[in-house]
Image 1 (tube, one colour):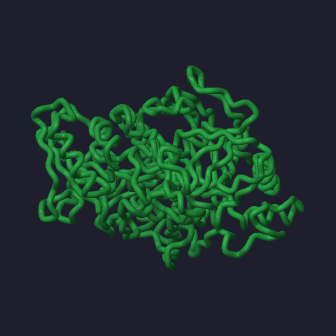
Image 2 (cartoon, rainbow, N blue to C red):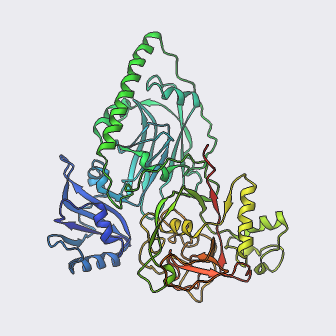
Image 3 (spheres, helix red, strand yellow):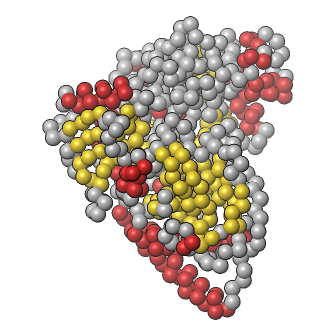
Length: 546
């Protein structure tokens, strides 16, 4: 059960990354809210934190009282259910009105909408949709919110959502008729007679109930929301370009029908007025963007401290895969007796990639066997897998056949697919915070199908808490996974070389918790097709940009 703690008398120069640096090694942080003065929007010295469980909260308080942080003024205590807390309804305005740099949350609400549209949360403008049509609100605490998407003086879409830390939030997609979208690029008036289509999509990719519908556009002045033109000048709107890699192609492109009529033609006088408006809006937009860029600070660990990278234009996400961004990453671990994981070092992944959300199943592999007439895995006991193991990871498949499957799957769709390298696999498992386990830095019994000598392989996705920061499942347990690499030592390692083997990653159901880490490295003979606890997942490369 999640539990909240509160820090008081925190030095005013402390930031979200300072708190995360202390908390991450001993707990799983759900959200942090650093209370700010509503008039000055400066930190007041009081911070609320929600952790995964009562036990974690008790450990943090105990260690803090034993001078975990060298700040004698700070007081920390567990918050009772009856005490005020920022995610409660009466305090919600404090969250929404606070600068996003004082809020950390595992909740992400993603919106696909026309570029330059503004995402409002309970009538507070929060994020501008980028030129790729994506926006991510990262400053939500658990609760109910009203979401509006506005453009100029017009409301494009409105939805009520409920979000929490345990489940991935649904995603919102706003679709316009193409001629309307072009008109919106030039003017922000005269759209009363057009229609937008709202599509709410669940975390699994499917529609949420029957929320897809056509909605007439109405002026923002007819709602409680302030015009986006005025609001963006004074409100803490965040340029969503920095979130592009998190939001691109999180929704598979689907054909959504729009109904209604096009915008009515304007008179010649109207066009003169509109031309003046266009110039005003463009100039104001440039000034606002420069101000936002100038005033947005990057602090280590808050997800904005990476060097600028070239923005990738992504194709639609292949079915069943997840996008993983590239960049500079940390590989390995020093606080272990296992020399194969040492030393910690930095590597660079030049560009992002797509990786299977789950391990390849017996059902997936059966299609390959049928199409290619390849020899079926030994544990099937025949030409087809028994029905009870269809959704379990395919095993007793050697390295060569695993790679051949991935290549076959990509060839059918004109894609370049293969096994992931060790570096790509570890980055996808650890995320930007370099976790030891997919969910955090401490082993939590029951999270993964591992550390169970008498256990067995389970259907993929059976342990939803064994999920990496990027959304990949079963990275710690179930079965080990082949990678593309020959097994070799890291530079500076004192381990023994194992020539002629391939590297495997992740833990199997029977492996101890020390093996189920994101950094543990196995080495296996590539031609061995008797490995009943080793499977694989596939990687899809991004096409070369022209």
